[in-house]
Length: 93
Image 1: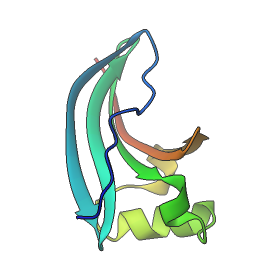
Image 2 (image 1 turned 90 degrees about the vertical axis):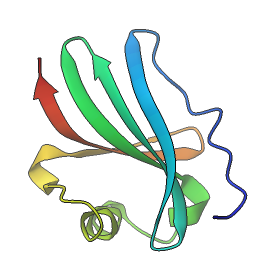
Image 3 (image 1 turned 45 degrees about the vertical axis):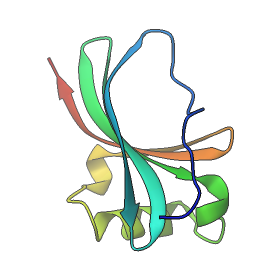
């Protein structure tokens, strides 16, 4: 895994982070998180924006979905600071 830290991923004040693991998808480092916000539980894959700079939103989704069983209709992609967040597996608890 290359030299990616992921220690400064922004977390909203009212979000509870349950876990963060550093993984790789096809050689690209990312963080996998499980979290809860306002009764909604979900997961995120978080990439450095520069690692996916040549991909548009559809291509990012295609890349992620080849490695994780993620439905496009049940996921969101958000860019914040230097990160790209792919949020999925939403569940109301």
